[in-house]
Structure formats: structure tokens, C-alpha cells
Image (cartoon, rainbow, N blue to C red):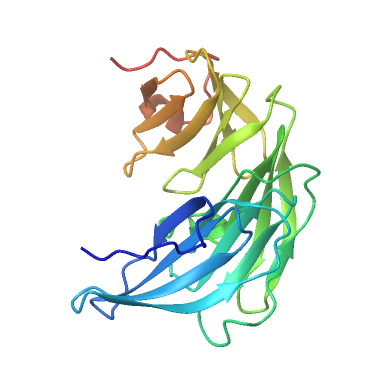
Length: 245
């Protein structure tokens, strides 16, 4: 067992993530972040059972709520109560200034990269969410630039807590404190349908790897598995879908 004691000096750790698998075999990166407003990148040698702190990223002025690695592991995005998300490079000079994503007026609750399996037109997208609004961003890693692509707004009536891309990148799923999850079309930002079976805030959403199902979970202790096979077409008429048993 490999243990990292008090990685954030006893303050709450909100994020603990492995980097995507790399060609280096047993050499992996681990990310931790939390209420101390710091994100820390650790180098792990799983074979030797050793770890060392590679870098500490500073800059957020509020607790870090969530984070994610890019599919190739070259970037990390962090989301914070300071109303920003930031992109950090894990390669080269790790102390270079992060790329800031500004545009939210409340705490940024979640941030994700489009998956590696996404269609080419969606592959460099990043999504963030805050309050009732989610934003899609176009990220150019080579140029170190990011720009707003389009918002996802006008659907939820309370704060968005979580966000996820479908494996092909064509759909986005959001969970909200309004007790619903919503499906969006990535290319246009339009709402496709809502899922209404939850009785309390929907705090987590995810697509299955084959995109045939989605999973949502709430404050009431319920997790619902929904059949999503019928969502693959452009025309989806039913606003409410019965959950899978």
C-alpha cells in the first residue's frame, strides 16, 4: 500500500486522480487538490512503491472543487470557487502560468475535457459549469489559447453540479440542484431532453463507455441507470425517459 499523508496539510482533499495510462509502465502521475486552493502533481513509481511531489500549482483564490486530466495526460483543468477554471501543463516547465477560463459569475463546480474517442470536431473541447450555466471552450494546446465556443444555458432552474461528454463527444450530460439531468447537443448547445426521476439534487452524471447508458446519482442516495440507445438519433421526442430497473 502506498500512502500520501496529509498532502494538503490536513485540509480537505476534494480531488484525487490518476493520469491516463502512459508508455512509461509503472511511472504514473497523481493529482490532488482541495480546500487549500492548491493543486499538486505527484510522480508515482508503483513498482518501487514510492512517490514524490513533482509540482505545486498556485493561483486559485478559492477552494478547488474538481479537476480532470486531458486524455493524453499533458494538461490538467481545475475548477474553483473563485469563479475560474485553469489549464495547467504537466510537461515541460510545470511552473509556467496557467491558462485562465473566465466567464462564470459563480463558483465553477465541474470541468471536463472531451474524451479521446470524441469525433475530431469535438476533440479539443473543454466544458465547465457554474450556477445554471455550462460553457463549452475551444482549447488549442499548441498555441496555448482558449476561447468560448458556446454556452449551454436556459435549461436548468438551479445550479449545475456535474457535467460529462458522451464518448463520441456529440452529447453532453449535466446534473443539477433542480433535481434533473439534461442532455445537450454539443454542436449547437441546444437542450435535447430532461430526466426527471430524481427527488433531490443530481450530483454526478456519467456515460457508459459504449454510450448506450447513462448513470445519474443524487442527494437522496439514489443512482439511476438510464437506457440511452434511443438518444443516438437527432430526433428525440420524449422529454422524460423511464429509468432502467
